[in-house]
Length: 68
Image 1 (cartoon, one colour):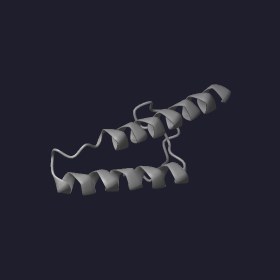
Image 2: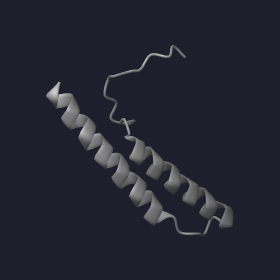
Image 3: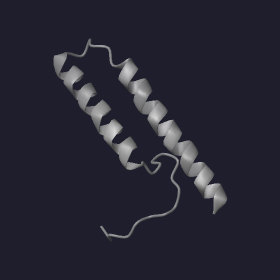
């Protein structure tokens, strides 16, 4: 690891704000907890929330990339 920050926009991994990182961690933790309960437990609601979070980050990053 070089320790340098990559400023290039990657649509698969958009940069997240601190609040988005916290929400992402919360949702992943809840999905893990449900995963422990069993494979038949519904997780679609949390997956949709994570997808919306990443879509919003992607849109913001694209707008910021256009401004530069």
